[in-house]
Image (cartoon, rainbow, N blue to C red; front, side, top):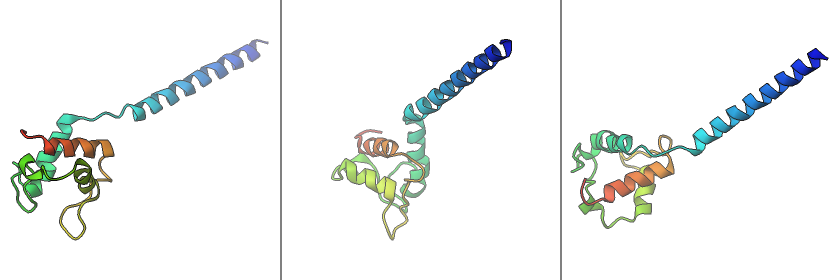
Length: 113
């Protein structure tokens, strides 16, 4: 009888541990948050390597807000995620989420950086 109680207790502990692990894992994926500091660094360092560290242009065009105002947010997001074929502009989809790409597009459209 004592063995059955011990096995039952181990079973309950195992289930509790599995449920806890599942909750932690799913909440980690669901709680993916935008890190504005990291995305600003990405824009100025990674994008800046082609577009100039001040985003005034280089190999790629000027990315300052006054030069992007005629672009729709969705278009910029698409360019960030999928790049521009037959140009040096790569797609960032393998490296960033759609939410991050939208954040970057909004950041680029802000008048003052």
